Amino acid sequence: MADKLKVWFDAEADFLEVRFSDAAGYEKETSHDDVMERIDTEGHIIGFSIFNVSRFRKGNPLEAELTTA
Image 1: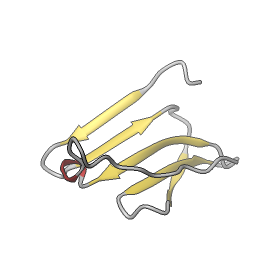
Image 2 (image 1 turned 180 degrees about the horizontal axis):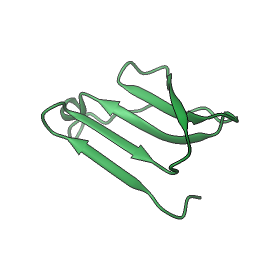
Image 3 (image 1 turned 120 degrees about the vertical axis):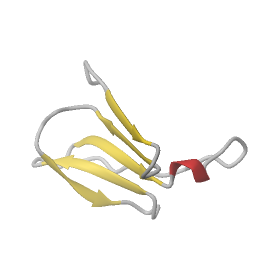
Image 4 (image 1 turned 90 degrees about the horizontal axis):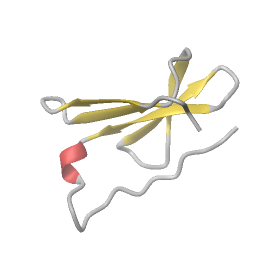
């Protein structure tokens, strides 16, 4: 588990980003069109991003599976 968690929300862009680490990484697609994983060079998940956040309201949760190395 990460010692620190960073969360950014951009209401204008309707975008949420969560990072478990400040390590360098890249974005990787998931099975959900609105979710991207952030992966480090060893393939570990170090965060994720969610697009169109306002679409997921009470009663309509977002469900996505993140992969592991």
